[in-house]
Image (cartoon, rainbow, N blue to C red; front, side, top):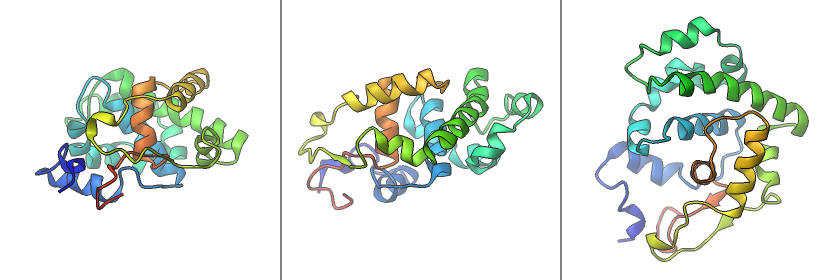
Length: 183
């Protein structure tokens, strides 16, 4: 059995994520925005915590529809600070609206969030064909460039490591091990 499964095995939510979403190319702007927000929420926490709160996040943030999140009021955002189903950090909650507004500007400039994201790799997936988990990096030149550009555009919670995880989550990076049946 591939070591690719070691980080999630035994957790049905993470198993589903690994097997059907992680490192799988997805060109949907709203999905990409969801993953951007969830990765940002994970700063300082485990991905497992965030994935177990994912459905609550979807309910709290209009299924991560970019336009709806961009239009959220301060009152709506403040109400989420008492929502036990999400991480109640004020900056992380407010970053959903801020990031949605920044993504809308990106969509206007590039035609879609997807086109912007894939512009960093010339439209090509990065596939390391790693043999062991220890080979998988935590950041890359692409994640450093993307994080810096996103920060300039007003997107929060996007350091190079979180951005690398984001690239995996939307399939721009495929870090499934070479022997993983889900690659």
